[in-house]
Structure formats: C-alpha cells, structure tokens
Length: 478
Image (cartoon, rainbow, N blue to C red; front, side):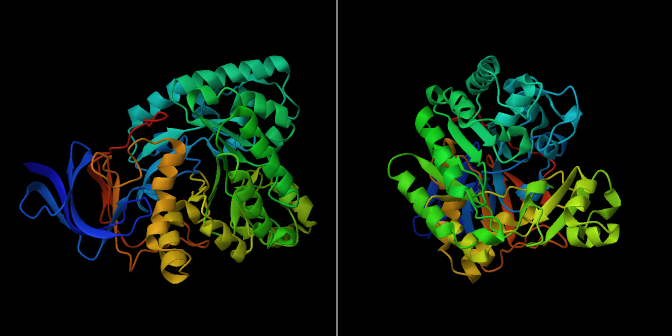
C-alpha cells in the first residue's frame, strides 16, 4: 500500500500522558492509519523526523478568535505555534447568535466591530467558518453576554423571566446546531448584574446535549473562593461539567492564594466534573477595567479610542503626562485595552502544574499591541516551563495541550496520536522550541516548530502558512 504521508523515526508523544516512543506514522485520507516500523512502505511524501517530536496538534481551549478565523483565515498567530484547533466563544462573548443594532458593548468589542456580528443563528456562524475554511479547526461556545445583548435593552440589570426564556431558546437552538456549551463572563459590567439564578436557568439547557459550562468567574480577586463556589453550584444545578477559565489569583493582595484555590478545586472534583484552563504568563489582558486600576501593579495600555496616540505606554506614564490621578486618566482613555501585570509567578506555576489544568492562550487577535500569549503560549509551556523550569515532563505538558482538552470538550478523535484519529499533528524540536513573542514585540512567531498538519495536510512549514487551508468547523462531539 502507498500512503499519502509517512513520518519516519519520530519520537511520538501521543497526547495521553504516556511515555514517548519511537516509530513511523502513516497518514491517509486525513487520518492516522498505521503506527510502527514502516520502513518497507511506499509513500507519496516522506518526512524525516529524527531528533524531533511528533505530537497531536495543540488545542487552544480559550480563545477570542471568533471573527478572526473568518476575516483572517490563515490564523498565523495560532498555527505558527502548533495549534490546530481553537475553541471560541469564551468569557461570555461569542460572535453568534448576534446581530447588533449599535456598537458592541464591552467586552464584546474585543471580538470586532458592529459589522462583524452578523450571525443571527449559531448555524450561520458555523457556515461562515466553513466558507472561510481557516487554517485551523474551530469549535464554539455560546456567550451568556451575547445572549443577553440579543434579547435585553439594558445589560446593567438582571434579565426578566421572559428574557431568560428567550435566551434559553436561543441557547437550545445553538446546541442543536453543534455548539459546545455556554460560557459566562460575570466579572464584566455587561453581565455583573446577572444573578447566579439567571446563569443556572440558562445552563439547564445544556445537559440534554452533553454540553459544558465555562466561566470567567465573577471575580478573581479577594472573593475568588465565593466565585468558584458559584461556578460549581451552577454546574451541579445544571448537571454539566464546569471549566473555570484562566484560573488565577489576581491582585497583589491575592498572591499566594492558589494553594487554597486549588484545594477548593480538588474538593469540588471529588463530587462533580470540574477543570480549569490557564495561560503561562503572570500578566493578564482585556479591556481597561476601572475596577482593576490600581497603583499596586503596572498597567500597559494597548489601545484607546479616545487617545489612540497614547497606546503603547504605561497607565502611570499617561497619567503623569495628562497631569491627572490614575483613575481619572483611565476614565479619559475609555474605551481602551490593557495588559495587567497582576499575578505572582509562583501562583502561575502552581496552577499550570495542577492535574486538572489545560492550556489556553486567551489571546486577543484584534488588539493592535497584543499580549504575547497570542503568539507564544504553547511553545512557552514546552520551552520555558517544561525544558527550563522542569515543571512537568514533556509528555505531561503535551497532554495538557491535547488529549486532556479534546476529551474535556468532546472533540472526537482529536488530541491523540492513535490509529484512526484525525491527523492534526505538530512536529517540533524539543531542544529549541520556545516562544519568541515578548511584551515589547508581541507579534513574533515561535521558534522550533518544523511543521504543522491539519486534517492530514501540511498547513504550516518553514515559517509560512500553506496557500491551501484545511481547517474544519467542529460541531459538538464531532
């Protein structure tokens, strides 16, 4: 038999957490068809993988690429770091179901402008992704804030019973059309007034579809344990798995508390299905939130509609130039984006290492000066945290970025190297892989990625995306 592609003599890390082993891997019709000694087999394309690792393509479980995969389908920030699947619709904000009558409210503005929200049904968004055929696979959550914006006239209040019924109908329709589940962003003003009961009522629609609930919790600061309890209670009420998004202890007064935070996670895990994701940096990034403005940390302004010329500076520096108190300067910049240097490195490592933690970038592709996680999250885990810091083995690191993620989100036959699995693969040099993106120069491709294959086709090699793109829209459990 002649195979389409054979990787020869690669060190295989299969995504399950099992030890690496050396073998050949044959690809045919988009899937892995044979693993073993294939020295006597013919192949249209043979790739010498000696001294390199072949792993499942990385799954970015926490992205805001919703409209970006359609407008910029080459997806260079993701595929250049070995990502082959992105999960969009996080933090309560999704591109669908939504048609906007005005500018998108914060933080929906992170996803694009009014004209980028043109998908009244989830199926419309899925079809738009299929038509764009991005370089990576796309699976999607439905955002709580997006649902609120679609049916409510004022986001700074609780939804009425009638509005909850309308939102629940939209969510149920989206689940029927292949959505993964529901996400919330309860820390933002556009959802903060939603009581726990509102989210619980919506989450009730998920269990019949084996859906999932993910949450940017109500707070990651002092009251974080209460916020975690609310998230877990929502999952219990709806009888669905819970993923806590970008788990962290934010704010200098909160540093060190990941010990008790992870204890709370572990306690919850004994009686319900819970997990979390984490990005490998001690700085966060979002819109400029007045509730997070403080003298205690450095806040870097990435964009400002009111004063675009002031982007690229620290808020303290801008306040001095304006001769204003820090809070007044922040108000003057609105709407704006910011990077917050708000975490302790020891906390980041503790969460990354935790047994139920997946890796997600939380990158913001529309930001003109993005956080480096957009381009560097996954190689940073493999280079800095695995090779240099020795936080975990290479096998464990890959598992957190592949098999664990695919299983958690119901991505069938993805995230593993096994016969019959889809050929989403990344070939990299474990000795040289590293993130090159920095806070000063964030738009920089990672080093050490030799090749990325999506659905059996080489999609990134020698620093460039293939002109032919091979990503698919992945409906739930597909």
